[in-house]
Length: 132
Image 1 (cartoon, rainbow, N blue to C red):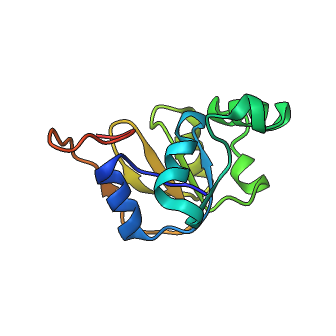
Image 2: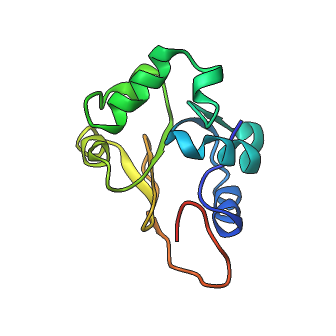
């Protein structure tokens, strides 16, 4: 399954980081992740949400994004979470012992295990998705 960080620049960062495991994704980014990382990361949801995933899975993700189910990554045994930094769940996960391992203007990746934080910098020469 999936890739993470951002178009070319983010995909390079992800590949260098060699992340492996299960990731709770922001729903619009899942297929991007699948395309770039292949089977190293198993995404929790992707853009096909209405046709592939149950109503319960979609509802669970929405609850999680809204900060109403911060334990969701624990329930699905996720190793990482990749979401927009403005979601309330980012702070909630940090309070629960998760670590931000990537921080950009449009996305953060949190991990169960500590790693130094990588900070994204805007780049005009290489478009990135969903960050800088």
